[in-house]
Amino acid sequence: MKRNKQDTAITINKIKQIAREHFTDHGYAECSLEEIARSVEVTRGALYHHFNNKKGLFQAVLASVQEEVAQRVEEEASQSEDMFEQLYLGCRAFVTAATEPTNRRIMLIDGPAVLGWEEWRQLDAKQSMRLLHGQLELMQQKGTLKSIRLDAATHLLSGALNEAALWLAQKTDVEEADAALDDCLYTLRRLLDGLS
Image (cartoon, rainbow, N blue to C red; front, side, top):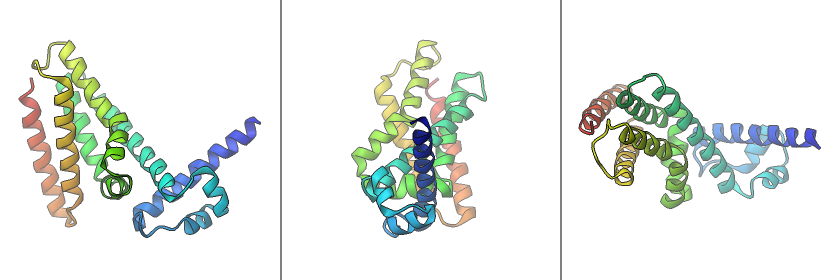
């Protein structure tokens, strides 16, 4: 029985990995489950067994992407002992990870369009937004953050970060994208300085 669960987990991970490549390269609308199943070397029925439909598979892939981005946020933030630097590094990690080619289309372009904003926001709330709220709460407890309403501050910062990532994701020229990222990170630093 244990072996079957391991095999199932391996198959599910392989399906999600291949599907992520397809969604990244072709976009949700242009992907077919038949092609994904063929690439994974499983039947279409096996794919439907694990993921009810294309949207269900996409949702699982998006959740994986958001988990990875949240992990990057935590790793980057942990590079400093200073709480404000942790906040900045985490925010910077979110923006840069979200706009990487392997994440951008799934997380920022197709994610809200396929799942709808409400479902997309719920997934975001479980990952990056949760980390942001936790950091702000810890900073307030330690007295390093101005007296602000944590829920409002979390939503405002999260909204700004998501909007910045969406804006950056639309930049197709590399030099223009790099310049916009620099501007974004400079401005982010100034905004966060205002909270100390």
